[in-house]
Amino acid sequence: MHRRSTTSRSSRAGFALVEIMIVIGIMAIVVAIAVPGWIRQRSLSQQRSCQESLSKIDGAKEQWALETRQAPDAVPTLNDLYAEGGELFLKTLPRCPTNGTYRLNAVGADAACSITAAPYNHNAVPFADVDGGN
Image 1 (spheres, rainbow, N blue to C red):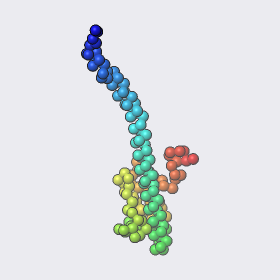
Image 2: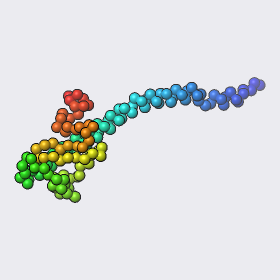
Image 3: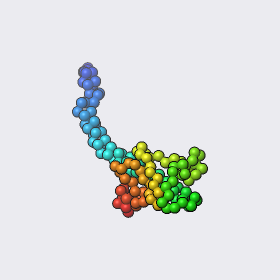
Image 4: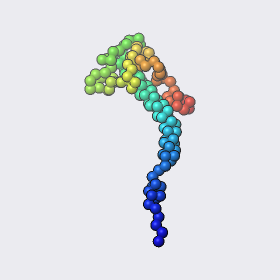
C-alpha cells in the first residue's frame, strides 16, 4: 500500500501570495475606475438639489409679489416667504446641500447661492452638463 503525504495536500489548500496580489490589483483597478464617477454623480446631485431650491425660492418670490402687490425691485425677507408649518409661500425651508446660503435678491432677479466655486444657473437648460443639452 502506498501512502500519500498529508503535507502536500495541506499546502495546496490555501491561496498563494501571487493569487491574492492579483485579486487586490483587480479590486484597485475597479475602485480607480468607479470612484471618480461616484464623486461626479454626488456633485451633480448637489447641483440639481440647489437648482431646485433656487427655483422654488424664485416661484415663492413671484407669488409673494403678486399677492402683496410688490414692485419688481422689491426684496422679500425669508420671513415673508416661509413660516413654520408651511403656511406661507414655501412649505419647507430651503437648505443648500453644500452648506452655502441662499440670497433671495429682488423679485425680478434670480435667487443665488453663496457657493461661487460652482455657480448654479437654474434657468439654464436642465442637465446640459450631463447630456450636452439634448
